[in-house]
Image (spheres, rainbow, N blue to C red):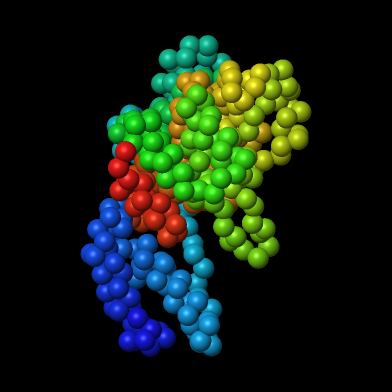
Length: 344
């Protein structure tokens, strides 16, 4: 390209080359993107593998093009969205009355009904910087009524989107990710995940190794994929005090806490948010991770910086949220293309 069109090829040429790649090699086409070649060159953001390679060539040939814009990820969980739910929403005095009823009711069906009726009020509160940090004080029933995270997420996106991970992960994504990870360099943590995935079903953590953390700023040191996994799931032995554990961990982003006698025998799963434990509805690793992902949107919580690629892949590829509009790294698109074209 450089030899034929110079060190700074026009956008039209870059598009032609990107289109040519997926035309000659159809299995490299990204079916989830608008044109299928954005991971090679995206004219809207100016990013992609061709763009990255051109920068290297330009740098090596002494080109001084000035500073280019950094990759900016659309923060999906923090986007204020309209719900398609038809449930009548309360406001004013009725909303305040519902909050009072929920706090003192022992009837789970009443709690679920009032939570549905106050969804819009709560969703707007999540995006208010002055109130969002106190959301579990306003709605403490998240802490003792399993299923409320899934209920809010379903009201936000609908049943079809809400059920995609549970429906697609075990049969489609899990075996393909395990197969793709055979190409990873062997190592202690990767080998442990491979050997344990059949019995404990933590194959989702292998995806962190396929989409490892990247440095997003000079002040942020890069961490390994093994270290990043600790930001997804943590383990606590039965009998350990939550207060003691939280003091030792000190994490600020939502994560999954597994409680058991040993890692291969988990008794309970919790979503940890703001140093508080929200019980998961179903006590399986797959269902618990489903709730962890949904908690980001329900509580408008940003993805952990080291796990941005990991969660973005789950968001766009598995759940189909913000497909075509979310900012994705070329690596996310590459893994999606590879997974979707893997025959099992």
